[in-house]
Structures are given as C-alpha cells and as structure tokens.
Image 1: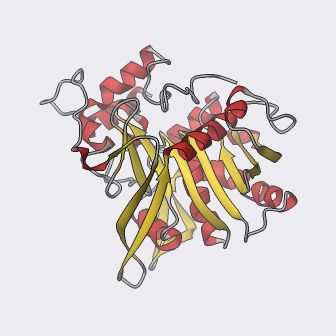
Image 2 (image 1 turned 90 degrees about the vertical axis):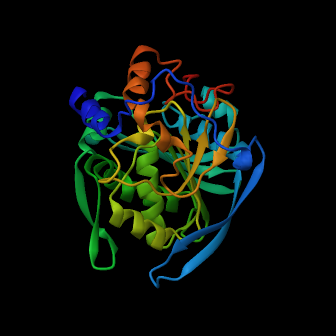
Length: 322
C-alpha cells in the first residue's frame, strides 16, 4: 500500500500548493444543483474519424437514486427482501438475483428498477477485494477489446472481477426477462464503479441496450486504447462518472498509463457539481493531483470525512451502512 501511494504521489505532488488549501472553485458557467442539465456539443471521434455531436441529460436526482442502488450492493440478503437502509432510500427494486465469485471477492446483483433493468457491482469490502484493487495497478491485455489493430489493456484485478461474474450476470438477466433489447443501467462505487465501466463497454459490445451508467469515486480502468475503444463502442451512451474534490481514488492509477472514460460530474464542494469537458478536465478532479497524498492520509484518519465516502453527504448513501 505504501509503495502504491508513493508511486502515485511521485506523479502528483505539487510543491507550490499547500495540501490544506481549500479547493479552487471553477468558473460558474457550468455549475448546477439537483436539476436536469443538458450537456450538449460533446464531440467524439468514431472509427471513421468524423466528429459526432451528442446531447446528454444528467439528472442529479437520478444519480442519487443510483448511488443508493450502488450502496445496496454492499448489503447482504437484499435478494430476499429489498429492505436494507440504502434499499429503503431507492424503493422499487424487484426480481433481484445475486451473483458471486468468492475466489476474487466479486459480487453484483441484477434487478428491475422503475421500468429499467439494472446491474450493480459491489465495491471494496474485504481483503480479497483490496487485492483486486492493487492487482489493477498492473495492466492486462483484454483480447475482446480492440481499437483498430490494437488490443486494449485494463487493470488486471478489475478484469478478473468482471469476467468471474459475466456469464452468471447474463444468465440472471435472461431469467428476470431482461433480454438484450430491454433498457439496462449499470452502477457501482469505487472498485464496483471500475467494474461497471467494463460491464457497460462489454454489454454494449455484445448488443445489450445499455442506456446509461453511474459510477461513484471509481479509479481509472484502462489504457489509451481502451479509452478509444470505449468511445467507439459506447458512442453517445452516457457514463456519468461522479468525482469529488477530496476523493483520491479517481486520481489512481497515475495518468499516462491509465485514462478515464465517460463524462465526469465533479463535486467541487459537498453540494454543488459541474459537468466536465473530456476525461481530464483541469477544472475538475484532475486539478487536485498535487494534494493526492494529503487526501489519502485524510481517508486513513477518518472514515466519516473521507471524500471517497461522502458523496451526497446530506443523504449519506455510502456512510449509512446497511
């Protein structure tokens, strides 16, 4: 763990900025509260090299609902009764089926949620899950993912986690009537968010009607080839990747080897967020790379003030327990 933190810090320490400094507020042009916001004119290059423009609607109310769904993945017994603490904050989940792969501490569930099929992945909870996190500092080739003539490389632990569950999740979706044509949403917190990103790509590549994804405090998943393949396959389907000014996890692993994908939704304080431009907008979480080590220490000292757990602090989806 110390080696991983020091390796990251070597890439991110900014000697000209105090770790105690308050986060610099971005220009107000893209701020929003809990309302639907349109992110228009998001350009991406498809395999033909032509620019495409998409309009994406982000709802903070919906993001909060799926935060509780992601939090429910940490709770036991939800397949028998949807009555855990986060479950009660996101009522309406039915037909729940649980998928597990104990060897790699992988866990997810599928269900119907307000007219949509859902796959939610559990984040880091056990020592084995921590091992999957650390294994993901090393990339592994994923032959099923290509861009041009190049194969993608993704975090080894993330891929191992996802592949351990993939066939069971597909079978479970079929059993609850979620055929490929039905709308599907993926979600997860932390490690679960990284795996949800792989799932969104893979389900979309396999012909599923993935309509969107929500992740919370996820680390980077793969290399530049994966980022390009993700854009080519996923197209205008939104992956809303929520980050926070004092969460160190989205800054890992170091930039250059790994790249983020999706649309970053950055909380620059506990209540106010903005939609960001691209995967490494310098007005968003990337600007806090210089205080990475301080954020890690803060999380080590206090669970309740750690930025990795305080998303939607008033509602406390990742602090309230089960």
